[in-house]
Length: 280
Image (cartoon, rainbow, N blue to C red; front, side, top):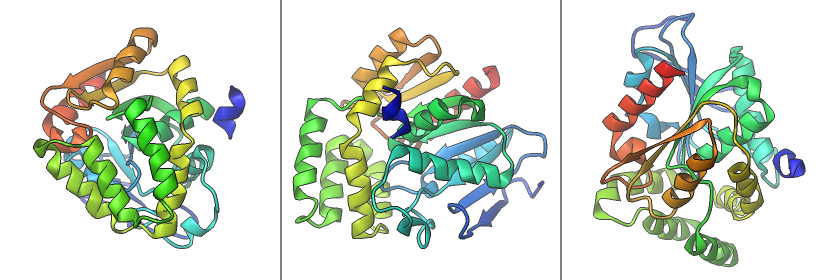
């Protein structure tokens, strides 16, 4: 199964922007020179802008690092041209390069949706870089509906405009009226992707099951908090099962909330996450 895994102080809320050819685009919000770091990783089709409701709450006690994954946000050329086919270890390596660039030895991770898979994969290969993981709207298993939709998407991705396909999946994952804000946020961010970029990420997600099976089997061994919406019908059941078997994991379910918990219920998300970090 191992081959599956391997395949500065500023004003209080003043960010520092960096965009270089050497690393992914990132933004830092510094609390103090000796504060611990919290690194945020968005999902597919999103960008670091989805964390705008988290920055203030976390920067009160931690240094905050927001990363745009390849092809997303401001991580465009030349980053996205380096790989023809994406694998999770390649994606994770690029995030680690940002930590190295900033000389961050270890960090707490916060991920949403697909970002939870990326930080889990990084933790598997580089456990010394991880202090803890906060997994919002975590994806650890595709239910039958999700698997059927992914196979359908693989068939249609070359003939259907990518934004139409993305809208379809966004409505399946976030179907309720109360999910509209987070659904529209991700759709608007997805508009900034290139067609080829979308296809590469979609192909990556379509081949995800062996990796997720491994993650469900193996406890990460670091403090892990899952924050899931009670209405996250596609992914919550598998997370409920995982925390029964993984001693390092705990679960907080947010009532009346869908997949993108940090956007739909930001105050609950922030309070629960920061409280967890204080106890790590």
